[in-house]
Amino acid sequence: MDLEDCDEVVSYGEPHYIPKCFREYPVRIAVPAASKREGMIYSNNIKLFFGAVPRKMYQFDNENVLRGVPRPKLHIDLFLSIVNLFLAIQEYSPFHFFVNGGLSYNENKGEFVLPESYVGNDALELDCHMFQAFFSDCEYPDYLNILRARLFNGKV
Image 1 (cartoon, helix red, strand yellow):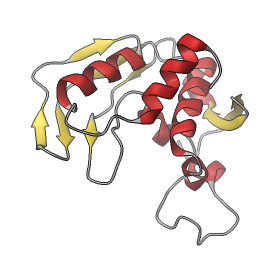
Image 2 (tube, helix red, strand yellow; image 1 turned 60 degrees about the vertical axis):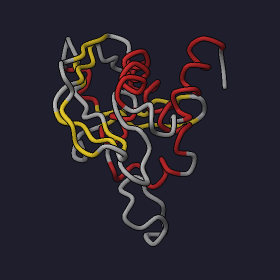
Image 3 (cartoon, rainbow, N blue to C red; image 1 turned 90 degrees about the vertical axis):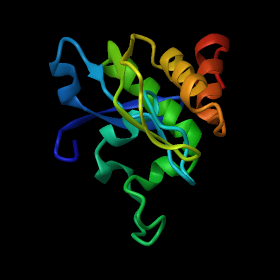
Image 4 (cartoon, rainbow, N blue to C red; image 1 turned 30 degrees about the horizontal axis):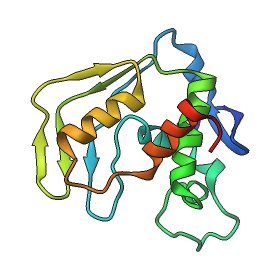
């Protein structure tokens, strides 16, 4: 994605740069790996898109700021950026299906294989289901609450 041309999409005042190639496909399917690693936040369908945008568009001028973080601007307000980026992509080039299956990781249990494949067309609903079923012993990520509030109650 780093080499793809992008369009800017503003989501809740935050600019995001979505690869134009996403629009080339009539059906878009996301296939994330569900995980909650030590010191990290729960990652699955919604957070998947953090890695789908070009790194060069999310850098600071000072190279020493947030060293080792590939897209440091997204980490200024991590949970809001996760939600804003997800909503920007869904506005620009919505993903139609989300497929969860295979190898996963839970910081409290280690690696495990999901017992079946889970397919849905609602990333929030599937993320919440997967969290409750396989990660309920972990800290619940604020970005799921923020997204839920935005989708059902308006602006947050």
